[in-house]
Amino acid sequence: MNSDCIFCKIASGEIPAELVYQNEEFVAFRDLNPQAPVHVLLIPRNHYPTVTDMEDPAVIGRAIQAAGEVAKKLNIDNDGFRLVINCRDNGGQTVYHMHVHILGGRFMTWPPG
Image (cartoon, rainbow, N blue to C red):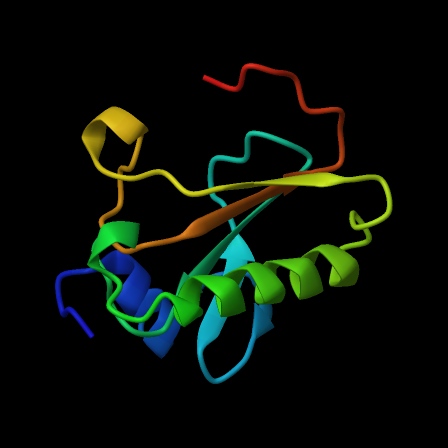
């Protein structure tokens, strides 16, 4: 845990959030600035500043699996949803704790950026 990281504080329960999913490795909560009718952030409980800082590539696989569980729980799995991982400033990352955006509830356009 990084004591300066807002997402670490959410994962530990120090800062309240609207949790929609959790297990021993991940926490998912609603984004405060939603970009779709459903916009949830899935974070690992362990602190990794960016996706490139993750030593174990299996964590990403488990994150995607957990994102699928979140999509099912929020009933966006059948209509479709988008997963986004931003990395560093030019990639649009604003909080340096690796996280997966789960977006759904509307048709997603392309290109996204």
